[in-house]
Amino acid sequence: MPKALRNLCVNHFLGWLSFEGMLLFYTDFMGEVVFQGDPKAPHTSEAYQKYNSGVTMGCWGMCIYAFSAAFYSAILEKLEDCLSVRTLYFIAYLSFGLGTGLATLSRNLYVVLSLCTTYGILFSTLCTLPYSLLCDYYQSKKFAGSSADGTRRGMGMDISLLSCQYFLAQILVSLVLGPLTSAVGSANGVMYFSSLVSFLGCLYSSLCVTYEIPTGETADEEHQPLLLNV
Image: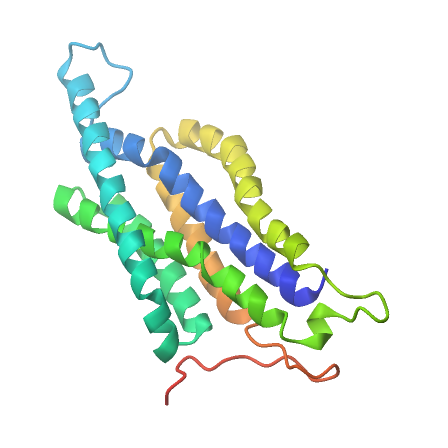
């Protein structure tokens, strides 16, 4: 596997790892942390009713995230005209890390719900930019190889390598976050985990991911500037 593709896969894995943790436990976070409910309380108790109200409000938060993902996807092509892919990656990971981190610090319902917009930014980015970068990689003979000497790479295989990072992240989330939640005692630990992994992805996307492979066979790796039209 070429180094550029390996780094892109690792970065993609970090993105899905942070996102899936938040997605699976967000309604629990709203019910237990924001609304101060208790899912283990008797069903007729006030604590259990608070938890149910929090879960319901968490579903509305997921609606906000879905709308923000749709909106960001619609304007992403326009953003690529004035910002580099590196910058868009950085913005997505940074906003998600701040969104999940700040959500654990606030108990204001409107603040927590408004932070759901940052989740849509990362989701849209993960579904778009890695595959766009992979297509750019294939413009390079150094990456794509040659049919003449049998080194030609298959784009379908590379797309599947990228896509499987989603499932690898799900496996790790299912193995790790359950015990983490039990150890911390609430879904707060999951949000901290998602925030930290997102910040790690922010650094990795800035320092390790290759954004441009020269078309020549012997040229060194180049990186895009943060702003294209400067």
